Amino acid sequence: MDEIQQQASGVSYAPSPPEEFCGRQEELEQLPAVLSRAGEHGQAMMISGPPGIGKSSFLNRLAYEVRARPGGRQSPVLRAEVFDLPGMIFSAFRELLNDLRRSSASGRVPDAESIREALRYADDVFEKYAAPVEPIGLLPKDGEKIVGVFARSPEVGYNHVYQAFEELLRELGREVSMTGRVAAVLVDDVHLASSHDRRLLQDVVRNLPPGILFAFTCRTEDGAGSGYAAMQEEIRELGIVEVQLSEMRRHEIHELGERRFGLAIDDPAAALLEEASADPFSLMACFNALYGRGLAPSRENVADVIAGADGPAGLAFAALPGPVRAWTEDLCVLNPPFPVPVMACMLDLSETDVTPATGLLLASGIFRRLPDGEYAFAHPLLQEHCRRDLAEERGVALNARAADCFERSIHRLPGRLYVLLSLAGHLFDAHEYGKAADLNLEIGLRFHHRDDHDTALILTERAVVSAERLGDDALLAAAERQRDLIRQKASGPLTVGE
Image (tube, rainbow, N blue to C red; front, side, top):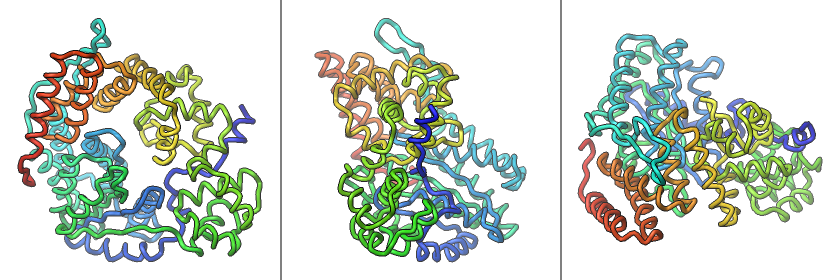
């Protein structure tokens, strides 16, 4: 185990700690003006760029500039992350509520009665709004079918959700403005949100109150389904500041090598990296490889490392010892955040034995631990690479195992919506079409009732495919009727605040 630990050690691919942040001086110079505008009338900021360019690291540094910098503004920061599941930005907004509650208890946010009341109301509204898609309970099995017991029709609509969150930000902004501060609300990876989810984001940033900075990150690769082009169109009329990150320049490459790895990168090597792969993720992979192999960072060694790699993510995985690489493959089909009981099940470990394993996963730099004790890949590109390299048969088997793991743990896992959406996806990808059809069709209908047509369509399309694979004409007809209904509703006009 100690030998594996030594082999697995590396600088993490997770977002850079703010004290190790490198470069981006021109972008950072925009922050004082943005913070000043936020204090006067509220301000939104979109941090954009291709995958691996350092958007999440920039968000970390922004949080530091707002709150933790010595002599800085010492202002409260709330942060949440959107993960790769449909319909999850509402969960991210609920996490912001939880973060605000923790901040209030710790004294980082004024413990004012107005904020406490707004928080209670927003929490209640979100709970009721999510009820149509969150099961009250989920029974393991009835024959071959999973039986969901869902809440009744919603008592509140979208407009209530928006107004509750707007009121909460207004009270928070008013309290911090009284002391000359700014509260920062940070949301990472909004490109993973559906159009319905982004609607909440747009409505919030359209009417930001004084004292609130709302910053979020978005991928620019539409080929990866980021929705960036649509986001750009949507923000043009909203006065949102966009910070577009690009590849690092030569002096920034020198800084990254020295500050994070203790490597003195010479000019020829830095010039090669600037030309070949100067995004932070690629640089991290190259420097980890040099550091792990004990190689000097010469131009020749850099060229050899880059030439022999299957891209930067492949380079990162090549450095892993066999057991850690196998665990990584076992976990790559899961949708983050990974609950520890599910991880233990996937790795065929007891929950006691999983602790040393997670320690090795963290030491490898490939995984990160989330604030609530769950786990995720340190960078989405690592998980995307691992999934892409899975043989089809292996992927089916791993998804079947994941579905079984979720079913075993379902009554003791938090985040019922996450559990249900994960289970629906794993059953479909495991080709367990009988259970997948029922569950995806039911949840798709619930999202349709919530007007989240993007998510509803994804789920219902799975039900259609499942019915086709089963040869069940009655089920197919029902799924196609639901799909047509969703398409018809989605094509209709939709106004903000409706």
